[in-house]
Image 1 (cartoon, rainbow, N blue to C red):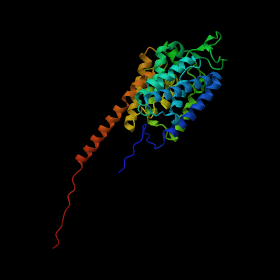
Image 2: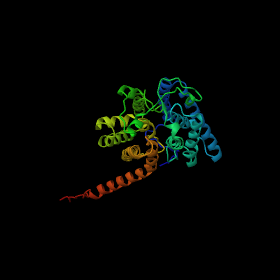
Image 3: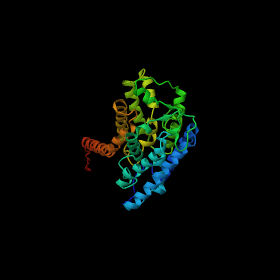
Length: 338
């Protein structure tokens, strides 16, 4: 038998990294168009700066570390678009550049590049920026306003809204209509609020076998069950709906939890990965300092991915050995001819 050595990440569907990244880029293009519809050309500028900073940081870091860069597979562009879509449209451009550097230098290249990074680069960048500059990262303007390209926060007439999670965190009850939540016309990060667009992207990626539905379902299901059991607002169904529809949750469940470099490979491990991620997300939302804690939960569950794979492998091996030990031995009976 001939063994063929290929670089990570290892995609069980048999597709190349480049084709999977192209699928992601198509989905992010749809979300970016919707962000442009809600917030104007400022959203395109934030995306362009984020992509440029990620591509530049990865190229420079790869050259300094004498590692092959992965620019040809578009993974740096995907990371740049994820970072942009997770930011409010008013975020200063220099913060976007810093986030791109953190993602590519500290969370990716320093571990050996694509496929070797134990943490999702975009989640690491978001966690860093949220802790360092919460006043910028947690300030969400209302949609359909004229937003300045280079210094939007200097406009004193800019209307800043309160996100659903911030309202719940303060003990209030969100007043947004269901239609506003589904179409994303609520104050949120510029690419995470359009739930119907994200749902369409999820169906497309599952059909294309770019992502695994088990992680997304187990993750969202765990958050829904815990939110219904311990509602922070209204009755159980009402509270679960707002917890699922608010913040980065659905976006992270579709695009970030299914990162092939950090997600487990076996089906049982994927299910446990989603369940643990959901538990940690609810914990950080309920008990954390910030209204949204998905980025912190994601980094923790990223570290558990390889352990979950090894654990499920051990369980499977023991099950097979147990079945073999219980299988009755077959004896052959020979008859002598008279």
